[in-house]
Length: 329
Image (cartoon, rainbow, N blue to C red; front, side, top):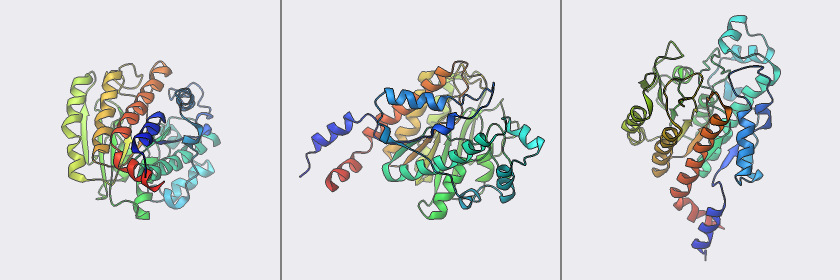
């Protein structure tokens, strides 16, 4: 017979009741003096270790195979990326320097989101310390995004038969134009994007549901609009899995955004998205997406706050799974 009180105390002592997907390769890309804070991945990893995360909680991603990539991207585009034959206009649209390390980073991030999605299905929640490259289209990349990891992972799971339908909840400050485009018209995918309207991208393909805000709208307006849609869309669409793009760039001190959301506002955003999903027993895979604060420590803190919210939510809303695991031991 299982002593549930002892088991739950053990779980509470375990700092993080979920796994992370991460690779040291993520931060070893030389972007020169670029606004994209590539070192945030290493800083988050180090802060998690200092916070008590055990190394065995971190899963290394594998490279995705071409079959998975071709559910979303064209064969011609994949070949051009691998061969380093992107045109000058294609490189300009990416807005990041091309390198072998950068291409490895892009492919590994796809593998990382696939891995995180599979773990989330099994365990209820998983965090990819990476991912969220939502500006990548079928045949080109843009806005720092080479490959659309979220869309590839969603289609991969659908084609395997692991899910019937999934939802993308995109809370990056920029609209997920690539994701909206590649998943358009697919009944098994619901795309939700809450973003700043007077901001890149200039052309915003329609998501299943777009919620637009304007520069300076702040916490109250942002959270009001988020609350008016979540959990309503969860109840209506009933996804088997949610991909949550927890962008740090709605932050008030971000270099590329202007929504003026405070750190407290972003924590409440995370709580709304995650609590309502796990309360309904919907598995969630969290990807970090953007974040360009003037001080990189602010970006890292925002991502860590997302993890802390996930920590509390996962403990609170997974008791049935906990009991089953205990009985099986």
